[in-house]
Image (tube, rainbow, N blue to C red; front, top):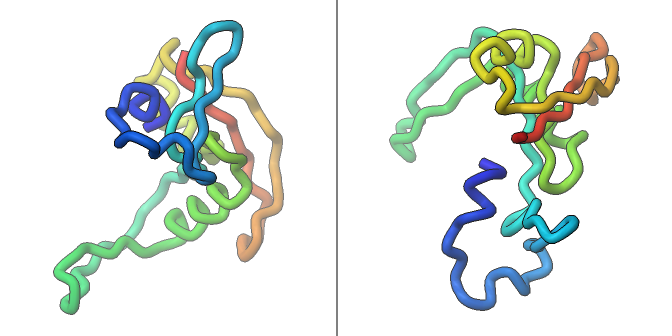
Length: 121
């Protein structure tokens, strides 16, 4: 998602909005567009159809933890639980850099959750 934000064809004037940004570091564009805060967790969830909207709704502890992880993220940041990173790491290889943040308390979650900050290389 973060990579797609860099090349998206945003409408004229969009990047001047207070909820967007464009950040350059040493001549390299590193952030552009919406300030997404992404939280990722892994585990079993249930899915149900919402009759009123016809859309699917995913429920379960991983969904709650992912929302709480996203709430801990800063703008334009991707955070993943240790469980999610352990599952994804072998297939992502060198394409993603991960920095451990330690086991942190999340609102509404009984046990501390190991968090990792992820970024594309």
